[in-house]
Image 1 (spheres, rainbow, N blue to C red):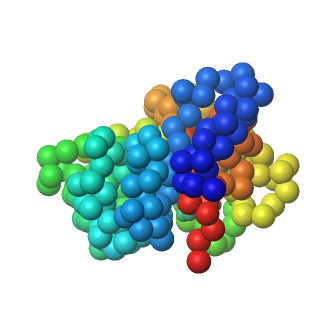
Image 2 (tube, rainbow, N blue to C red; image 1 turned 30 degrees about the vertical axis):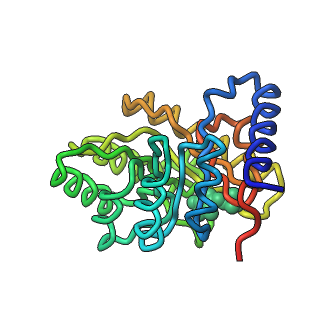
Length: 240
Ligand SMILES: *Cc1c(COP(=O)(O)O)cnc(C)c1O
């Protein structure tokens, strides 16, 4: 299967999930996650019409993004989806349009300052660890609706991030457990949806974007309200 065939299949499944959930497919942004893929492979996805691309490692991205941008006919939007170490944040602000993986107040402050130095505003999503897995990054959001201590930490932290001058907080991002059963995965996505609504109401924030869903679970994520899905393997095949 070619990359463009794979993209068509993903788009068909997006349409099916939207039909099931009575949602409009144009409300879903497909972000092709291009980690470990070469510039020619990435350009196949661009030629097939994708404009949103995601990378998770700073060094790899910095090497590839200018080459892809040079060869692409359309304007591309690059999403950082992996954990960013503070000392690499500068490169991220130079190359990316959106950072989906802001996972601490400290990193958010740094991004705001670096964006200010470049006289720009940076779109971000807040990565929330809803599943509670120790291996996952993100602001602690496990059991947020039952555990007031979680909210007592999370609400002020998000309030401070939202008030930073150079950041536009567009929404939330999460990752479900890799190989959990459907019920568990669905609950993680539903919890992020509920958290967004609670934050929007109680902190008076507009958080339209919910980035959730990868190759294994994006139809479930769409049913639970995702507006962005991040797909690697279903488009480019298995990684090494
Ligand atoms: C790799 C990655 C993806 C894509 O995963 P696939 O299973 O290949 O679809 C999505 N989000 C993040 C944060 C990733 O690192």
